[in-house]
Image (cartoon, rainbow, N blue to C red):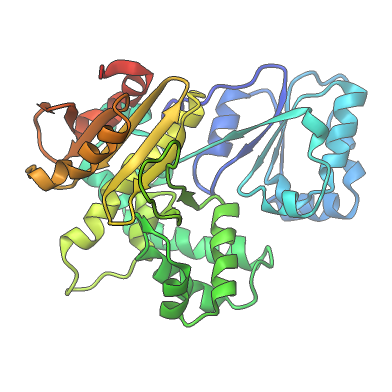
Length: 383
C-alpha cells in the first residue's frame, strides 16, 4: 500500500468521502488498526441496521475508547442519528466513509451538526507513488490504487465503470433509464477537458436537455466528475460562462470514451494529460489543505489557459501540452493571461525533457512537475 498524503484527524469524528476504489477502506484499516469496523456492504449487517438503527450501540462494546469506522454510511442515513447520540452519550469517535454524500444531503438527515469534519479521498497522486509513478502508464490506465497492481488494468477499468452503473446509479435509484445514462456517459466523455455544452451532449445521446443537466449533477454528486468554473476575478475581457468538465480519473475517462481505428492519438491524449494534471492538483490541494480554488480561463474569442489556481499561498496559471515540441502558439494563452494578471506565476507543462524559460513563462516537463507538486504549489517557482 502506498502512504497517502491525507492525515488522520485526531480525537475528532469525520466523514471521508471518495469514489469507489480510491482506497478509503485500506487507509482507515491501516490508520486505525484498533477501530471497530462496521461495513454496510455486508448484507446481513446492512439489513439489521436498516430495520433498526439503534442496534448500532450493541455492536460497540461497553468501555471501547477507540474509533468506530462505518463504511458506506450513505446506505443507511438514519444511522447518523445514532452516531450523533453516541458521540454525545459515550464520547465515541466515528470515521464515516462513503462513496457519495448525495443521499445524505438530499435526504435532509442529521449531518452531526458540525460534530464531524469532512475529508476527501482521491485516486493516487504522483507524489504518493514516488519512484513507481510512470507518466505513460498513468495516461493509459489512471491512478486508482487497484489499477497499479492489476495484471489486466483494461478489464479492471471496464468492470469498475460497470460497477458504478449498476451499484451507484441503479441501486441508489438515481435514474430508471440506465441505457440512456450509459449513452450519456459516452457523450460526456467527448466533453472531457472542454467547455461544457449541455445542449450538444443532449443531442448526441438523444436525451432531453433537462435530463442531461440532472445526469451531470449525478456525476458531480457521486464524486466521479468535476466541473471547473471560469476565472472572472477583476476580469478585463469578455469571458465564457460555462464550466469545463472532467471525469475524476484519466483511466476511467479513457474507459468510458469509445475508441476506434479512425481516432487520432491527439483526440484522447491531450485531454488525458490535462485530466492527469488536474486530478493530481485536486488530490494534493485537498490532502495538504493548501486552500487553492481551481478555475480555467477562456475569453469569448477562444484564448484559453487550462488551469488557474488561486489562493492564499499563490496564484498560478497552468497550460498543459502533450507535445514534446513548443511553438509560439503554445504560449499565447499564458501571455494573454499574464498581461491581465502580471502577478500570476505562469507554467507551461509539456511532454519534452527540458526546463526552459520563455519570457515570464516557466516551461516544465510534466513528468517532473507532478512528483514535485507540493513544492511547486508552496511557492517553489519564483515569478
